[in-house]
Each structure stands twice: as structure tokens, then as C-alpha cells.
Length: 486
Image (tube, rainbow, N blue to C red; front, side, top):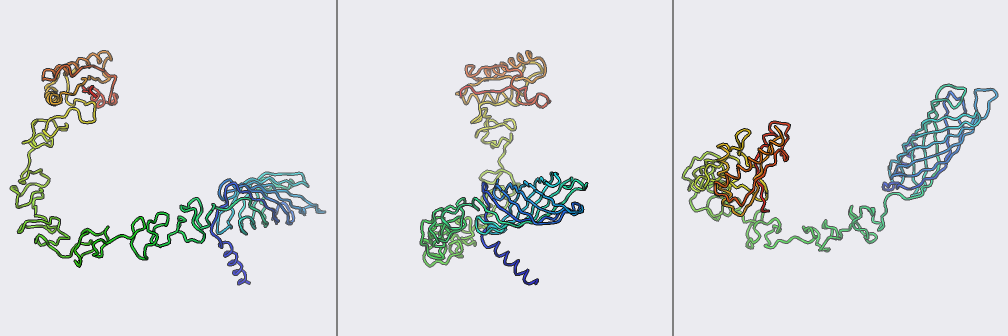
């Protein structure tokens, strides 16, 4: 007997897994009928007798359906003598998840609402229902359903009993699916149309996972293969054509770092000649990064002249052999001095006292208007408190600004004065106007043509930082130059 059970289960499993998984599409409708065997709660004292019912399902998403069913049971109440007949009608609605397990078969899990009428005693109760079962798909449209149900009512269906009810049931029946499984496969190549990149493959043609054939088995699909008859085993490029070995050295062109190797030359994996040292520096050419080293010069393992202090100048030319690491050097290997730290060596710097952090040109002088920017905040241009009198440091900065402006005579601009929110608005406006005028006057005194610039105060109307903080207010008290020739 156990052997027969195992054999039966194996046969069922083989049937369920006989076809590829497929989804029941949204919009499909399922109609069916069934026989049901109830197991009433013991408190009801009703006999368990077979009943019948029907069900309707609408798939609202792939493999997810809304179902409704109605059953009718004729049973007998045994708690009175004489016994009497009872008619019970459960009406259920639930959400059901259909879980594919192979082919057209699937597991069912669902739950929802039940309304049960007991006509004989004119009673009805609402409750919750659950379902677990199995659909065995016999083709795309006919389904054998086997499932179990559980109905819970908080109040007893028998008004003479005060306890709640837990009613179980098992059902079996047939249903019909009006709709389709899975996605379409118009060319019948086993790849659904929604992922098929070659939707018109001839019948019987072998295809890859994208639905495209590769008749010469070179790994490139026919729809993009420019060479459809590549010999077996050839390495191909992205177009499906054989990769060449132009110099016939056994290394294909894409991997060949020495593409013109003479015929018969023994080569390494990169297609270059083996153990050749053209400059006789003791390092073979395939490893030599400096292939024209002068005869007799000491080299490192890469074939390049030795640079003991790592300053970029070889020992043979280095006049300062122990330069500290990271030091900028000239062609003799000696440090290049940059006193003001602007990145321009002293010997090339026409403005040797440029403040730290400013943008300079190749001559080391301040660039006021950086390419692509229309305005610049004059950092370091400050005034005596509550006055328009320039500080000594401000004049030093403006000297550099004037020098830069005089070398760019085509630039016109507006000198803008700005204030923070401290103090009276009107007073801030007047002070910013005076300060802007003071800067303009100083630039004129340094040779900047008056006709190139105007001045205007904006008070506290154009903050660039938060006036609620000290740092923000300091940033808002500023002088800006804004180009007017763009």
C-alpha cells in the first residue's frame, strides 16, 4: 500500500511539472462547479453531508484573482428529538494568490469574507474565510480544483448555541479558464514576445534566451552577425567576424602589442619578440620602458635611468642629488623657489608678493576676472569701522587688482558695495555707496580709466550668506566687481 501511494504522488508531480511555468493573465475569468464535504463545528450538532456549489473568479493581476462562490448543504440537526432538516448556504468572497508550480498547475492561498444563511432557523452570520488548495491544469483552459476551506463566525449559526463556529470543508471540482496563460509567443520559438528580440524566427530554428538564432555558433546572434558562416572555433569580434592575425605570429591583432613582427620571430603572449635588448641596458625590450637609454647609463628594473631622489631628473643630470621628496625642481634637479606660494617660480614671477589663495596667471600676477565668471568678491578689501576709509591691507590688494585691470583694458565693470543686516537699512545703503565710491576712486588713482567703471551701493539687499550668524554677516559686508562688457 505505501508503495502505491508513493507511485501515485510521483505520477501527480510529473504531471504538474510537465510544462513550463506560465502565468494566468490579468483579465482572465474562471468559472467552475464543485462538490463539497463540510465538517461542521461540534457545537452545532449537524451531520456532515455532501453539498454542491459554484464559483466565479476574475484575475485582477497575473496569478491574483478575486473569487466568489456559493454552496448549498442539506444536513440534519441532531440535538432535538425528533431530528430535523437544516439548509445551509455559505456565500464567500476572497482574494486568492495562484502560485505556479509547473505547467498550468498552481497552489492557491486566499482569504476573505463569508456570509452564511441557515434557512431552516432563519438565521445568518458574517465571518471570515480562508482557502488553501491545488489547481491541476489540464491544458490551458480546463482545471481540476482540490481545496480546503475554513469559515469562522463569531456568533454560532445555530441560535440555540452561544459559542463561535469554526467550520471546515474539503472540495473538489472542475473549472474553466476564459482567457490565456502567460505571454504570447508568435513565432513559437519558446521565447515570449515581450522578451523576444527576434520575433520572426523560422519554425524549428534553435534560439538563445533572447529568441535569436546563432547558426554558426560563434556567440553572436544572427540578427547582428556580419559573418554568418564563421568556421567553428574561430575567435570573433562583436560583429561575428573572425579576428585576424595580420603578422601571423600566433597572437591575434587586438592582443598584439607588436603588430609587425618579422616572419619566424619567436614572440611572447603580447606578440613582441622574446628576450631582445635593443639598447643593451640589461633590460629586455618587452620590459623596457625607456628603450633608447644611452650606452653605459645606469638604469632601474624598468630600463629607465636611475633617479635616486625621485625628483624627475636622472642622477646623471642632477646637480642637486639629495632634493627632498616632493620638492619642485628645475631641469638641473635643483629646487625651484616660489616665495609667495602662488605656483609660479620666483624667477618667472612678475608679482612676487601675491596674497595666498588668489588666482594668478603664468606671470604670477592676479587674475581679477577668471574666465567664465562675471563677478568677483574682493577678498581682503576692508574699511575702517563705519567709514569708507580703506585699510592699509585693502590698498595692497587693490594695487594688485589695478595692475591686473590695466593689463586687460577691454574689461568694463561696476564696483558694488554690500552690507550686512546690522544697523539701520538706510544708513547701510549710504555706507555701501560711499565704500564702493572709495574703491573706484582708489583704482582711478592707480591708473584704471574712470570711464571703464561705475560704482553703486546695494546696502543689505543682496546677501550671499546667512545674516543670522557672525560668519554670514562678515561675508555679506563686501565689495564686488561685476563685469558690464558681457
